[in-house]
Length: 312
Image 1 (cartoon, rainbow, N blue to C red):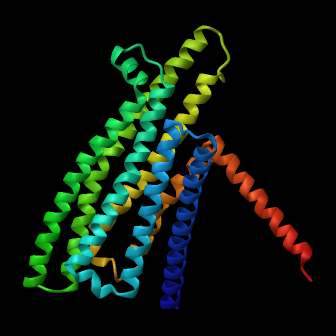
Image 2 (image 1 turned 60 degrees about the horizontal axis):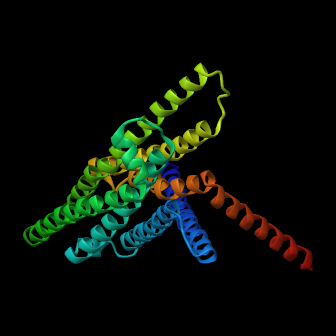
Image 3 (image 1 turned 45 degrees about the vertical axis):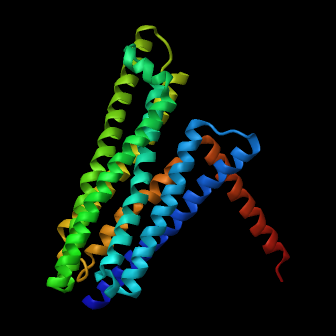
């Protein structure tokens, strides 16, 4: 009975992870296609749409790297002990995850600079040059990525030496745990940046509402709505990213038990929710993407009804 229950839970968690991965692919491909089609139609693309497109493409690559890793672990787990395989998987995961996270951070910075209003000279200069700020942020992120890749390269080299001296599954698990620990450390940099944007957005909204209260104006003006929309976008990212970081950290701590119980499947389940769930939240929070998704749903409904009417 216990074995049957464990098997049922394992199947349910694997199914959930699979569904999250499928949703992640569909949502991110949808975001990329909508922006590319709009770009072709208009002959130009806005700065925020560039961020959305870069985020969607990097997220698609990230989800595909996750799928590749899961398939290799399921079909040929012995290959995970090969040094070159570990290097390929860790580097591809690191690069795609890096751009996925940093494009989301750039989106938080963009909304912060576009929405908030401070009289500080430095802030006003940054506000007028928001495109340059986003570009510089991405360049800085490339430096961080370079450092991250070097650290992973050093640790994979040491791992290969250890594999020669001492083979075994425990050695592979320890290497995987070390990789997760390194990844968790590097994820705190964009997280801290987005958290700062969030706190400054709240402070700006509080000041704006206070000013409106003194002027006896309604509380749902354009600026207030913009603040709330920006906060919703950043909050969705922060909440899901916190879950993702906690998932990575928990997996690195419990690495020795990963292949013997349901914990690994559960941690993967909550971790994969980040690239899939955040993209869905972006679709719902963006007017153009939301309208495009409703159009697709309406078209699919019409096609289904048409097929149903033509049936025997």
